[in-house]
Image (cartoon, rainbow, N blue to C red; front, side):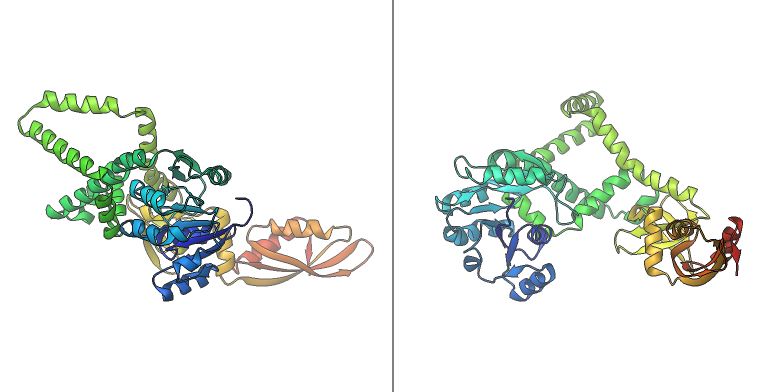
Amino acid sequence: MTDKSNMTIIGGTRGLGRWIAEHLNNEFNITITSRNEASGLEVAKELNVEYNNDNIEAIQNADIVIFSVPIEHTSQTIKEVAPHAPEGSLLMDVCSIKTEAAEALMKYAPKNVEILPCHPMFGPRVPTIKRQIIVLTPIENRSNNWFNRVERYLTNSECEIVITTPEEHDRYMSIVQGLTHFSFITLASTIRKLHINVEKSRSFSSPVYSLMLDMVSRVIYQNPYLYYSIQKNNKENTNARKTLIKEGTYLSKLIEDGNEEDFVKNMEESSKHLDNREDALIRSDRAIGMLSQKANVLTKSIGKEIGLKDLLSEKIYVGIVKKVTSKCVILENNDEISLKISNIDILSAKEVFEWKKNNLKLEKFKLSVSLPSSCDEKYLIKMFENIEGVIDVEITDIEQINDSLSNFTFDYSTFHKKDKNYVEEYVKGIGGKIN
């Protein structure tokens, strides 16, 4: 897969299909398809890829075909498209449920076409494929030529690869996805039924509650049809949900009956079953501590300039930190603005500098200085650039005064007018005479 192969993504305008088209566009010749021609043409133009509204036609020259359609349409789409795949091509799907997709690929893909069901364990919000988990579920003797190429490509892309069977994948996904999503959706529904003011509850919250609520919200804010589809289509999810409800009822009864001994015994047995206790504590401490760490950095920055990026709007704010609470930071520039600490990233000094350089109106000055003629222009520029407040500088004129002295004219810019005085005092301090 080192050459630029042709890749067709069936359903490439949304979700993971669009993500693949966008992030692999430089490495593959990509064609996307969509049932909505207007949307397909718009996305293709935006991503600079090809668009075809005919799935069969779109795969005629494809080396790789990726099915990225809703779970409930995956098998039918494979049935319609797979029989027309070119000889020697590879058919893959990115469905989060593998058994049905794998069966459809085995049934409808010609014998001279290879298949490799897979499941990228990330959503379309991730910025890169690096360090992401990709589950591959190869079928015996159905990817003899392509499997090693795919594995090598993913390894070179620094992905973490898990190789398993479709059946084992679905069993574990009933916990990783099914049980987790169902628990979070149930928690959100319970909070709603109890008429709890969520915003007010955060003022009482422990770090664990805040983290849990954010994770619940992360699921609840997603496409509910997708989450229903995940619950419905993975048959293993039924057993996971029933077991969760059964255990919840059992534990609740232990509490109602005052049966402390069996409740404690149950927790201890579960604790032994969960592995890597110390690692789990370290990871959760790190996640919980992130908010406190940001709050501490902001508190130490009170009275100083700082740059913050709102993760929701991606807007950048630069100003003086006026006040920090457990939840918010107040920045003062021309106006005061309050930002939730959980929703921001703190920019580095370099990032703040670049933002100011590109977004603020710079103050431009001209400075004429008498200095020894032997001064090297390159080192004068470097010295000037290191003066605090100076953004850009160039030497625009050099006039010889005598054998030992020359007049150097600098054009430079700063963020503030007051920086001019500091620059001139600095130049005088190194022996320069301002003309």
